[in-house]
Length: 541
Image 1 (cartoon, rainbow, N blue to C red):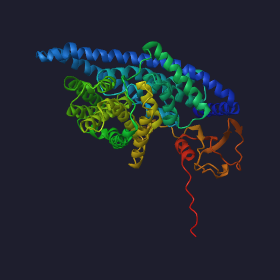
Image 2: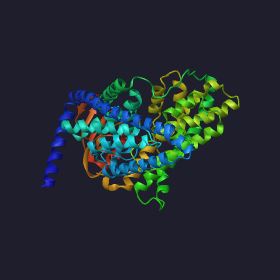
Image 3: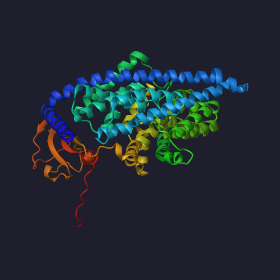
Image 4: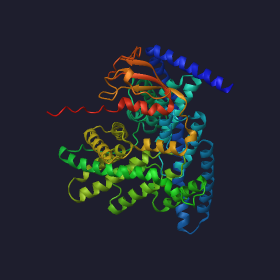
């Protein structure tokens, strides 16, 4: 009986998808309108998350400055014991929430990528409230995690919630999840352009009109909502930025190359921090969470700058608050190691912002060296800092356009666009030459291999495959498209119009194939539309 019900549901899904594909212009207009509602709902949820997170961090800073540090200095350890007890309770709450909603753990971005590919299912409401509460608790307690990963997943499940409430098809739901993720990043950093580009460049991996319209409207709408609560101020405050002169662009290249190597190291640490937490001491996740929380407690006395996401630390670096090279190196190593400890314990929270902070610290160290060698004037130190940020992001995440737009919007100064774009491109190429894998792709693969029970690879979905210029599929007849089991081509869109996918039709760049397939084939099918065709060599004379 259950199989008959599932079969009927799938048949209804396919019928409604065919109708949507057949009425393409109406379908895109509907997505545009739905993107507004996703932006409003996601913006409100993320505003609540940002408010709770801000209050939790303010409480932690007040507790240290007003009670803990003065009391310990007077050898009064009662406040410290009370704080330790609060951390034990916080750790238990985080542990229980991680068990209740395991898909809410960590950054959330690999999970969203998996859902868009049809490899995962998310229980949207459960993840929504767990991500908000647990994210605020963990980051508020001092863990070196960012708000952007949770915000992206919060936005994604908000989009999924809108889809479920409206009874939309799975294909349409994936568009709304992508638009919700766009709203998440936009609302987290007041960066609508970066939010839209991240969703397209990193998550959905194509720029079709069906995904572009709701993604754009949701990002803009979510930003308007957060402006209402938090104002229009940028995430970072870089004052009096002076554009880098052309004669210093060679130094930008060197900084970007070093960031390319640093990105490989950063990714390696994130992917292998589990080896540390597999030690016999860590008997379960509760012990891991307690270790991370008490590490934060200790650092709160000796190196408080590395706690939390790190917005304030970037502003301090830009203002030149730290003049000692050895202390800057200590901050760099401390932030990196504590980010690995925080992320590895598995609580909800991302490494997106800590990654930018590590890049800022790397740039600050390099700027200090360059100034001491009299290779640059001290006035360009903030420029080197932001180049370090965008370069490390491009090397780790492998989304250079998103990184460039994000830093431009977070600093509010577009005068350094050329230097940022150059640094981002060089760091990207360096990481590619070193054969490093994009961090979110690597984390998704690791998650799928570690917990295959969460995957839904045999479920059928309709996948949108864009045909890229110079790709393996361009110029091929539909009959020559490599076949996979459980795969049927059901529609072809060319210049926004439906074309019956006759076997003898040749595919062109900017075509979109719609293929009914098992979820496990989705990533490989998308790759076919992106993979470059082999170069044909002429015969030797």
